[in-house]
Image (cartoon, rainbow, N blue to C red; front, side, top):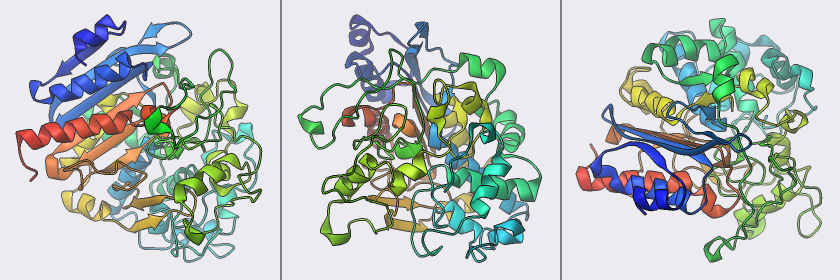
Length: 472
């Protein structure tokens, strides 16, 4: 599919693509021509040079406003990698020790069996605090310290350090509070002053005013029946109005990353959640509640089946992790100004694809943290069955590593790291290839094929790189 073909189909895409990466342009245009996109952007830097900067489509389905070169959008759990990088920068200044107990800097945290929980446990999703027990009231959405205090008063669901499970939203409140305690500043303030600001990146952890006004509006994906290749993934029911509201739960990708409870972290939906992230009522097949406290795959069951069952159970740990704070209580869900400006460190990044790719460009170039710091941070700390998602996940210090939940690697991507976001967004770095890339969009994945958009683009990038030069 060429740019000319995409234009003939009624969607025009814009921007620059180095001839060496022509396959990337074909994939990007093909997503529009195939009806998988509403609006989207994709950017790639190689050794600091921009080789791909593409955008197109509609930023707001209601008004028909076009997606421009500088259109930002909420990137959900792509935020987690940015927050992790802030924490790493504080370790280099001697302000934070990731191996030390959280209680050393946050004394109120040392309650109910959490005295020995370390900062590394927070960054690697091992703390046993994937869900907030009591519903967070809307009035508290912009009070991150208050939400963190709720978590400080909870007991872990599992013994910290003995297992890992995706902390879809709590990751940000926990790590963000540690950052605030040692620096006196929020994640948003540090990103603006030390990461995005100096490089002129269109990247905000929380956006207000003019940035929020021009941000793309998230929309639920269409509800086409899955193709033959998608048969294993039921389509999430559409309970939305004429303009679908994008809601909670995520990133990541997908679950995630948050993601909705009905989507995998890589954007591939499983089943059971409405477009706004509210879990669909009812018990999974067999009538048993899947509470997420059983190790993935117990009893020999397919982890994807267990994940699908958990998604359909409103009381599952997965849905509790993804649905509180309950964004669906706000008009417009994640499009609501309260969410856009709250700057939750797990899912509050508002960014352009070029801005997020530029973040990874600077990170792999050693301009944010030292190369040795990044190497240690991207070392796999946990790998295997996820207590919340059931499928295998893998993390360094806040960064996803290739696994079922992050870019099961195309050829050459074994050294990739980064994070996905709800509905399909993707941020990725790869020091071995001098690579920084990002994909942002506003049509949330509604079928497996839609959730694979970022993966297909990344695959095309690596295929182009392999033809151009070997990895370093």
